[in-house]
Length: 229
Image (cartoon, rainbow, N blue to C red; front, side, top):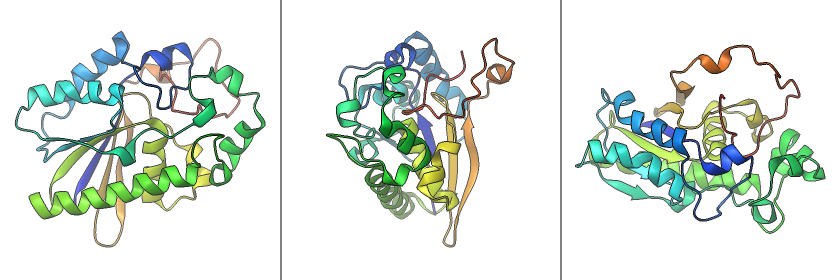
């Protein structure tokens, strides 16, 4: 079956301001995010691509635009099912403030039981995203052959939930995964099982250098965070 190249959108203005953007309109890439997006065509230059599938949100559309500009024959498909998690009443709030919410502990340790007030549950988020992947795998394979590869640009929690499904991990464990902005994750699907080929690859190892104030809390940043400083 098809090879899925998952791209998390580049760093956004909400990432750098510590805000959980959710589906808030008008959130664009910041300067670094735009540079990350501009580098994406070069990173994928050796990969024949059948299509690009994108979340409808602006930050994802901006991330794939340089790739589309570099390959004008590459079709773009907008897929609502890989939209950001609907965080409901949490959308637009500071992550530092949300850390004090009792629900945050559930999101961190028991994600399958987490449902955002006024929004959706994390189980529903994963289910729609995984359904979209399987549908697009079948479509890409039918139209381009079983060796075809395609890009899907989405959001941190969406990417992590798709990877968890591919690995057979319970959703409660998906916070153990991490994907930086504009990172590339590759899942190769076969008739019997998926294979995780890459996870959160940015090609940048500077973020692994010791930090002056390391975070040892073990808390995963909802939405995916801003990546390495």
